[in-house]
Image (cartoon, rainbow, N blue to C red; front, side, top):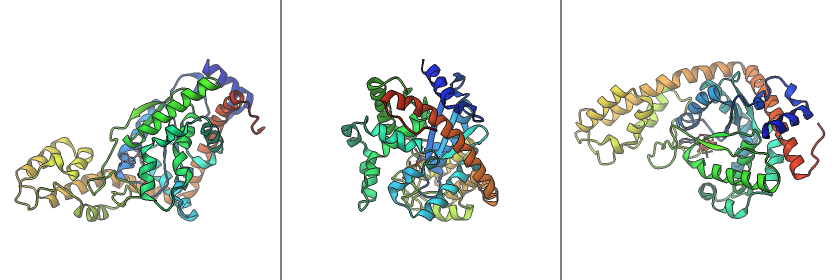
Length: 356
Ligand code: AQP
């Protein structure tokens, strides 16, 4: 039923003629949608929590991956900084293995339907539901002099991001689960009040839902200064690791350590092969391996992953025209898919919309 109406909407707009577009709703592949904010340098939390999953998802789903610059405005970045960050984050996404031949990679603000749908969904989303969002409280605490309305309605824009592509599967980190539940609630309300337009998005749990920062306490974050950057060199990483927290009870090298409570050892869990990890754990417990050596081993294993990513990123930086082309092509595909949804939405709610 959904799919027939969607196909009709596409036919009406002629959008399905755009190359590479929603062959989607032939029903052969489910859709997924996810985004990353250009709010700073990508870190291994973004890599493990999102990008690694995106690389897998693009093989199984029709994928829309976005650099969500409109979300970043809630932090009020200077224009030039935002422009640069959009490019750098796009480069990081591609260098990590997201393939623009398989997935639609685009910048959110190049698809104006995101903001149109946000307003419409704002009139469906309940204030009481938004009031319960813990991320608003957390973010307000980190920027007390700029608690803007966008910070509060951020989850509505996020819902629009997802449902605009009628995504059925959404990969989320731990911090985003509450927002996805709100998105599901909004979809149910819209479909009940107006018409069955949107599928209810289901969570795809990240394999690393919450990577801790170097402080060993809070989530690794672009804006918390506790990150291991994805593009950092081995030396820069080692420099940061030197000051990073380990087992707080291990005061001297001769003390036995406990890898189970050591944040550095938790990173080994992602980057170090199992056999070497077992040796490190045994060395730590037996006090034959010191924290500095443990960190050096981690730096080497991190570099084995980050080195090739950094190299691909440098190649992309050296060909800026290619990045522009990839993002322009992604925007064309994303706009077409978004407009096909908006035809249904406008029809369901009774507004006219632009005549394209
Ligand atoms: N520490 C983390 N562990 C696991 N996953 C993480 N993600 C972010 N940090 C971690 C996941 O990365 C994706 C993109 O995140 P985002 O840029 O949209 O926003 P964020 O979660 O707010 O990321 P940051 O780095 O903490 O940014 P700032 O400092 O700007 O708020 C998401 O899938 C997220 O779950």
